[in-house]
Image (cartoon, rainbow, N blue to C red):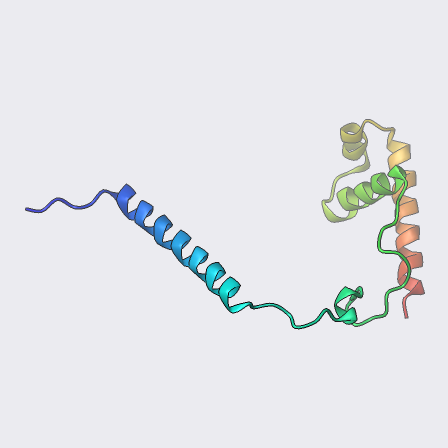
Length: 115
């Protein structure tokens, strides 16, 4: 009775064939010279879902912004209590309540500004 090939040899053959196919495709594209004919200025523009970009894409935020966002997610999305949030973040429970109130107010302002 003939011996069956090792499962490792099948894996090795698969990896070798995959690598050869990938290298072959890259080599064929290089030989044929597949690339854009000219650089379009439209290619370098920022695209924001069909809207014209408003302002810079890179903005620095204060670290408090991230704490307020974290509190909002933990309380409103995850359902943690103020005491649990305060214990995990090492802050006072009243601080948690105040920052969550601020986060809700900022979210309300943002939602009302949108058309």
